[in-house]
Amino acid sequence: MLLSKNYGTEGNTFLVTSGLGFIGSALCLELVWQGVSQMRAFDLRPTSPWSDDLSNLRVHFIQGPSSFVALEEVVNKVLSEPIRPHFAIANVIGSGVDLSERLNFLAAKLGSKTPIIVSCASGIMGRDAVTDEHKEVMMDDFWGDGESNSDFGIILTVGFLPGLRVDAIPLVRPRKAHRVAIIDHFVMNIRDYASSVSGSTSPLAIMMFGGEDADLKPVMEKLDHAMPRETIIVGDERARFLYRSGIESRYIYGSGGYFSDAVALVFARDQYRNCAGAGQIQFHAVLSTGVSAVGPRYKAVSVKEIGFGTGRNTWLTARREGEQEILDGQRILDDVNNEFVIYDAESLCMDVQQLANNVGCPDLYIGVTEQRRCFVGSEKSRMMTFLVFHGVMGGDQEYLFANGVGIRTGDYFQFYHSDPSTALSSCSNVSKYFRNLKLDWSSRKCCHAGSVADNDGNKEVVGGFVFSCCGRGESFFGHCNVDSSPFLDNFPGVPMAGIFCGGEIGRGFSKADEGEEDGTLRCCLHAYSTVYLLVSYTPAPPEH
Image 1: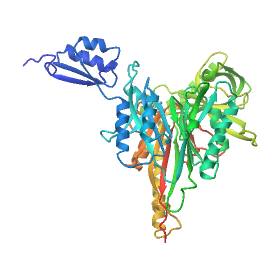
Image 2: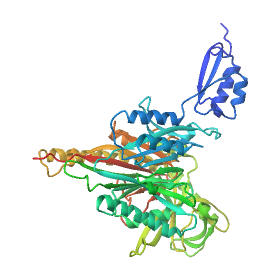
Image 3: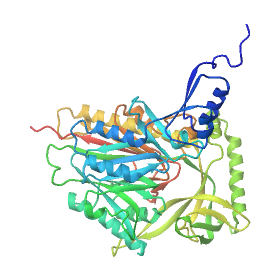
Image 4: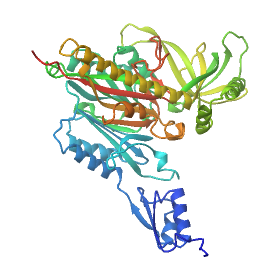
């Protein structure tokens, strides 16, 4: 029996998902040429560069619902049950997204006094509203051709935290203003809000969203100085966002003469409602690192800052620690490349080698140890030591080029590279930490049964949020849901939302990895890492 090369396609109907993308449209065209009876292309976007070619071949377009439709469905589902939301966060993946439309819709549905933040992300993680399956979705999953102007998905977090007060406090900058004074004012606004609702200037937690063109390094240094170690700070360093505060006077985004460099969602205890019988909310933060140190330490010799605004870079020369020879950029990079050759030669583990193949050429950073004197307003200053990551842009016969500014002559630095094996091991350690946390709470419940002295045994995780580097995900690890796995494995069924972002903010960690934050070297802005925020609730002990 002779079969046609088009056997199985001729006369049949086919549907191709993501049919307007580069690969999807090519598949549609190939199937048409093979003689399919009806060809249908499903996509979230309305058009693409290949739409005309498909139309000429009578391919039928089916456009899926936009994230705005999805947002409306999710909000209606949330509001189908009685709830008094303390805050809402909507994270959208896509390009050309009208954030104001979504912000206004949420404000109309949730109330004008509910603080709301809407932002664009490189990816989202959470449970699918239709299938209830957990997914990590990156914009590249939809935007393979790079030509889309659509939004592909949204994750919505609506929170109610008994005993707490929450508000969105912006870092607003007049067009003509001294940046240091503006940051000081921002920090003092956070303190004042916490004091007004809790009686303490220290909030429990802060969730930050930085603007696309903002430099959050001086902001985080001020916050790290001003807040006690117990105050957890997490967030997205770089995103396009809009916000609405619970207090109308704070909502000045878009006002003439002002920029919003960042917004902080501040969580503080409510001294007026945190009474007996209310229970207690707590926050727990853990870090999964994704970089490894490579090569010797260097000391910066000459430093030049080039450019302006967020496009500023640093050109520098350096010498190896303990040596006198001054090295140019090419010599320094040659040193690092030699270290990678040695590292690869010693990598005998097949799993590690497979991960290295997945990530391809690793991203390179310098981690600079910066000793700086920090202060807020007229308060007494103190010396603090920070680890600050700068992306390496290259080097030549004169200088090493690093992204960002703030490096000084005499600062020490070491090279770091993105490393999936380190990230995978660190994720495993986070999972073990979560498991031990549950075991600790359970053991307290057994040891103090019937006692009101220790109620931690009744503590349970009620939610979580994840901020992961946009360079991680399936393409980094070689399989899906790795960054979500510590939460999913230990708290199945508990609501969790997460985003892949343009820079991970994290401070106030519990120690899941040895060597993390020893109390002297501070790091708030991370590279290739994932920051986990758990929210736990301990019910009030029964009255006797």
